[in-house]
Image (cartoon, rainbow over all chains, first blue to last red; front, side, top):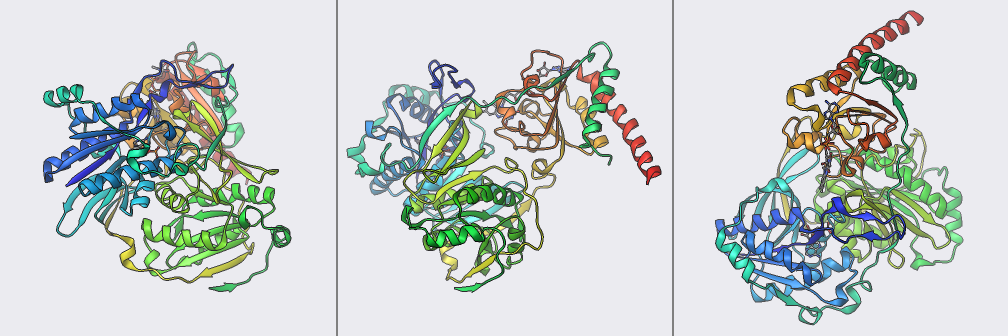
Length: 272
Length: 366
Ligand SMILES: Cc1cc2nc3c(=O)[nH]c(=O)nc-3n(C[C@H](O)[C@H](O)[C@H](O)COP(=O)(O)OP(=O)(O)OC[C@H]3O[C@@H](n4cnc5c(N)ncnc54)[C@H](O)[C@@H]3O)c2cc1C
Ligand SMILES: Nc1ncnc2c1ncn2[C@@H]1O[C@H](COP(=O)(O)O)[C@@H](O)[C@H]1O
């Protein structure tokens, strides 16, 4: 079986800010990490390979330094890593990104038919979760989102059985192969990388594919291929602070009573 | 296609104007809201979106439509009218009984191609996100997830879609200037529920179409309901949330007592969940549930941005924290600096005393 995993390099979102003066994103010094959900997607692909045999290929679209996340994927146990990098890819929104990734998967599929594509539930920089379903649509693969567990792959029947996580339920579904899964974190626990994998990851330089290697239509990638554009960015508005109720340390009972006064006046809290 | 016509209230002026207007934007006109339903019950976010959509439709001077897909769900159209839809497109088919991505996507895509709305809004629920990504890709149009503000640039007839990025540290306003429809998802509770005007009427357009089981490519084998899930959290009117400062599972009992006294629901920060004091479904925030209660108690919660994005739309925020510098105080309506282990029990007993008194007063006054 051939498992393809899409991994994205993202900034550690806790650190990104808007510069109050220039109103631009301050990303300097912000560490880059593998999108946490994607690490679980690689882990799951590796476990599926251990169960069913086959091969795991990790791909990432991004600037040259995104190579780092592919090394992480190799350390987790991916067999092959490919960076899709080209100046014309810069500025791609989710629609263009899913196109580029789908073109790469088409090429991989020609070399060795793809059984399953795995993506993270969403990338933590944009939190959109659109790229996975987008790739599935372009490839005509069965989209299976929010996967919590892969129960079985039945190659004979050409089906995969998974559990999906919904708001208030878990759903067991059988989908036709080839399929694309987006995974939630509960799907597995990351294991410590095995030493040979670490060594191999450090020594391997991920392959690079450019626009020319992918046969992409330049009108459908990068800024040109992105229907959405950012009009402006700004710091989130601060909700104005309110009133401090004094005496919480010296006389907690009195402070509590003052607060209850105020809350009951609003009539928002009722008795049971 | 069969079409039933009811009397039209509100939006009628817009509809007339629309007929006479030249077809700019390739004739894409109208604001659509996808009405999400499971087992015949609509997700409240659908009505919240009709409220938001109503304003957009009015600024654009076009009709607001609700789109209902399902099996035996015609009764939801009256609800949609009551919440502000001028038109309802109804796709009722036995194969649409349970949500399956490819069937719902096919039907919705065909409706969009046929009727050409300029805006399509959906809830950012697991169902809505699953569907939106497929539909937008097939239509080769833009999709903006998790919008917190939607406005119309009336001059250019463009939807300004504002959303948080980078975990809420940054806001971005996004446009989709050249493709239609302009698609956006919105999380539950970001917009308030609009007033419900029962008896309000609109036009019902029932579509007929063909669908085959094979096109689904999936079979649902089983759905296991999880009890006490966060579904309730995003509907809660009062939330008593605790963080790392609560200190232990035992201390969370103090918060539970307060919650029970005032008819509230328990909530938690990620730190409290990770400590194992509270199950994950209680987590509020970026990676938890977004809530919009009338009153939110943040107890022993510092106020990290990822927590704030999940609760800052609460009407009233009460913060209790021993650190006067805790960021949560910057957004709190009322703040008390002190030890939660003292203040929370004091609050509970004070509420108990006052609430039971006010009910007995209420009874004697009646
Ligand atoms: C990608 C990402 C996503 C995240 N998503 C979420 C999310 O969805 N929800 C979320 O909540 N967090 C989320 N976080 C984590 C977030 O950054 C914070 O780490 C977390 O919210 C902190 O929880 P806390 O406020 O309970 O703990 P702390 O920050 O440790 O705050 C504890 C507070 O308790 C106070 N305190 C201690 N003892 C007492 C006492 N006896 N009486 C009164 N006060 C006391 C302290 O002064 C302190 O302010 C996310 C982080 C990342 C990186
Ligand atoms: N540039 C990228 N390179 C590789 N995979 C990506 C990229 N962008 C998104 N993905 C995949 O799509 C998932 C969802 O991303 P998003 O739609 O941006 O939230 C991620 O978890 C990745 O698996």
